[in-house]
Image 1: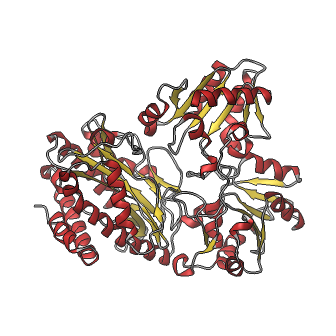
Image 2: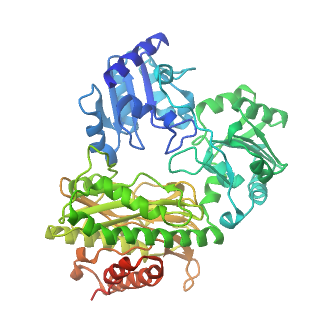
Image 3: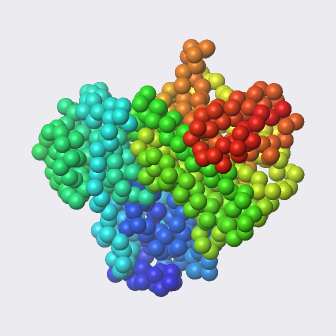
Length: 589
């Protein structure tokens, strides 16, 4: 099928007079998760991971993915005539320069790319005499006969009970920042920043509870909001009030800026696609290209959001415990695989108040599949579990009061002895972050090594970040905060929610990851210092712990954590799970 699609695409490119094409995994809003109508990369290549890029050049095609997806991409490409390459700017530029000639044109859809993202590639291509050419019509859309329609589900108000602040107050607060900038308005390029600013949610994107939208915020706190007409009902209009005008096509949004006499507009070049910048410039607006202030503002959760997250994690932890308690007997009965586990956990979450969706596709990896960092189980890949070896489950839920993300690695029976040391070194790194106290102004990259030290001591490491930001009934992957080796330059601040998820992966045997969500708070004992507080509540499998590797302080942390897990969740789980929970949280000596 893909060979036929590649041939049809090459014929379309010839008609548009370009010799190559970039096919990113993304939509016009730069969302991590995209509607089915924007799954162009998956349609063309079969690869459905959350990060990747395909490129065509003449009679050759390549798929670029990072280390998380190397094995998955190999499996999903199969024997198609598509090369697999590393996803980095240098590799992409080199491959294109090797396969295009001077005078050729590489086409791209300006709605799917940002200017900063394209700039290095454009420079390299220009040096070789290759043109990077924007296309008016996306070539894949032109040949995708059964392409799904773009979603336009109803947008709904998100209650102040959960947000802790009404939209008018948020708009006024953000608009005040414009007073210090040489700009008349702020462009909101992304549905997540619109969802936060206007206190609205929707169901247009899998796992991300937003409505497809963008907006303009003016100096006086009023705004113009784009939503599909079908997404706007009377309740939403009342919620938005008179200071927010609605438009139902993008052209009207640009025209609204002109009517408001916007001469200079603040735009985040990392969120706004190139087409948007072209449209603003075409209307003679000057652009102030700086990071969107809402991204930083929504990262700082207020007391209502933190209380909501704690409540959501209690319900979610109870669901996870009921799943983990049933898992051994399901496995022992036979015929129970990775896919069945995902369905069972989903059933447990659906029984909890407020559950609306998984916060991402669950990573359910038994044995060797657990070693695939971002493994996505399918009917074809699902392994039947046996009462032996290790099983990794990374999952989360979306609730109106919070977003969850948790990973547990459990023993299903006998396992290799060396797995115990690997697990314990991962646990030591997890505890090192969880128990850390650090001065205000510290960035995530400055504490990342604490999570890795025990692994490094044994000559081991993991190839992913240690922590990502998490939204409040928004994206499970939220910036700008993160913990990882790469420099972010973003200081961790009180109110931020992050994951704490060191891991270790032994290819062909097993994967180990222990992930909790934490929030940053001010230290009561040490003014000017910050520390983390646990949100996630679920037992850590003590059968995998090598006691002699733990210090007394680490042991105390583990026992105290398990005491809190047991005390909090015991009233929330069914009778059968209570006995399991008491056993799983017994103090380790």
